[in-house]
Length: 369
Image 1: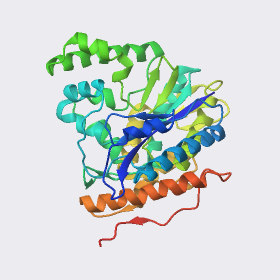
Image 2: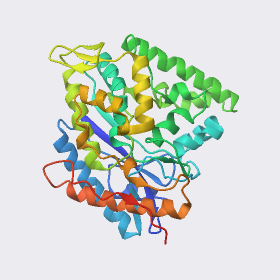
Image 3: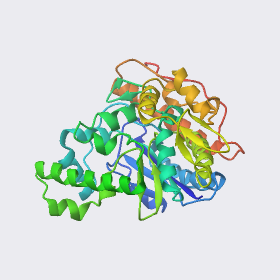
Image 4: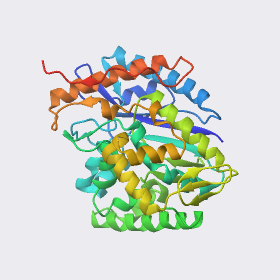
């Protein structure tokens, strides 16, 4: 099956402050503006293997990094910008999101993620499997900080899913395994009607909402169906170093390919020639909560991932490497962003090797001047 990648990266200036990067979309056709000015999306074409995906991602990132550095700017591979920022939305639809989400718009403005698109084949099995792989967020978590506070191992997932307010949580949190593809689609449309009602409460009329959004646009959950592409889109991982994301894409693609011929059933987790067994959803929720909170420090999460075929030793998430105080000051955040920007450049250049993963780098620590 074919797969494609989209990764969001923050743009900072030479002091580490977030800055506008929208002009960088002109340097490559696979660079897109995002919800706010300091955030860019780097994407790939669909490819049949991860090696081709790697080549294109490296070429695009080199082009963007060169253009950014020529103007004193850098790209940062973090799931959050560490400290809070409140740049205004940069599109008319973004402005509508601001109005509809109100005070809860802070979480999407302070989160950067990765989206992996898989070609639709056996969609019900694909939805079930990607849902069950939600604890893999522990493998590529890239920031333990949200709005200046050290919170959990995967601060982006925690904020994106839980800091959006109870009314928006059905749009952003992990959905349960569907009874069928039709049932999934029905839920999407039911949620869209609720989105229309919320918008009306916020002063946005129904005609404007229906003209600006289609039902799938309002699904911000870790898994969603894209009818126009058409793909199953996995939105669980953080923005992270390319080598780590490519390793994850390869590992997940291997399992997704099995769904063409192998049933996905609920039971004791494991992968065999006859079936892929995933845990009951309540158990999965508990595993995901531990993965978000503790990352690979959770023995239970590591055991689950190994059972599903992941070699956790091949991952070294950035989140575990960001050593700093419980409350991060702006100057500390700026230095950490620059440190991570340097890691991104080194990681991109190292992709020339045969393996995705590079030797583990020294732990990043902030040192006060």
